[in-house]
Image (cartoon, rainbow over all chains, first blue to last red):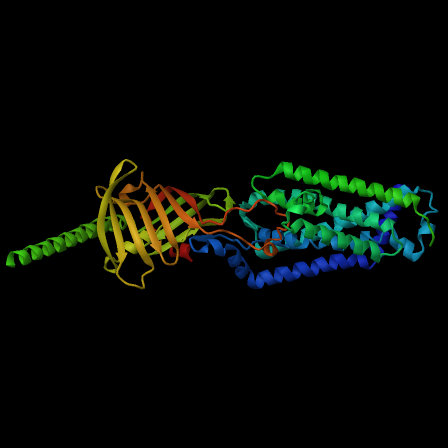
Length: 280
Length: 229
């Protein structure tokens, strides 16, 4: 019954037009980035290498598919959570808004089962969005720009990773990025349990991401102690796979923090959904 | 009074003669070095490049180096290769036209247990890219062991040469470039590195080293012009 319910929830997500907004937005953004780089990527690269240009010369294919994929992921990983919340924030509250939640709860499955099946469907949607992003950013970029060493852009330096070493780092990076997006899906689902309209949970999730990102970015001593606890700090952990050496301990900490958030928020969502008065 | 003038005149003549002789010696040293380098009409070699620069991390890479007279030079690599702007052939280009600079022997020194002569090079034209050059030359074998070239466009680069198998052609087996690197800083909006909370480093200029180990030299066997396209 649980699997059937999950399958039904996946169909529900697939049937909603809003589910395709995220995928369409990702496609459009990646296309724009690739077109811009295709037309004027050399200028972008020279801006990056400018501090070294006086004394050093760079040879080889710097503007390659791997760099494009890295740039795209950097740009999108901030915005994709918002696109995910657009769908997952609607999972419970959307039923309330449409008045179908009462009917849904008449199914011979516990409230926890219903919530978890919706959650699994949301995780599946997140996976589809992330895979679509991976296909466009890695495979299409490589097709257009060719393979090559990856020049990892950091605010305080550059890492150059050899081409044969890049694939596996992207693989692990995507796994951690998926975990971060699952965290966002869980957060919006938890908000969704508190609301009977879709806008509230989506706006709340967006607001929280923006607020925590600002707190995490500000170099103010008063925020220094809370920054390691914010989920937004650990959402960028996928980037750590592109450092040399890979900071394994830092990645482990980020994974633990994200897992704790996921379990905590899912617990809150289950508790709230089980206690929820169905008034619509 | 006449005796005094004669002494001054004599001193001037002696000084001018010694300067001229010094310049002549320096020019002949440089000419011998140039003639030795010119023995190689073309060559190709494998290069193992190790980059040790502040603000930049990368593993050593392998490349292929091609040279053909007069000034064709290419580094071919599948990987991203980083080399000084004053490249391998900078010295050859500079020594090719001795009328553009004045040279003088400055001192003696010992490098790699070899006695060397320090020759300074000053360009004659104001428009020259070179500001000042110093070469540490083994006059016995006509080999440059160290070069410090300061140019307007590329700053100062110190190059150390190590010779072994191809010293007869003046081609080194190992070259160490020491370069000055300015502080590297990219806006976080470009890198999207928003959560980088590592402590900031000092904003001083830093030095970095690029070590190139050359091997598998193929000299004067012909290099196709297509390689340089």
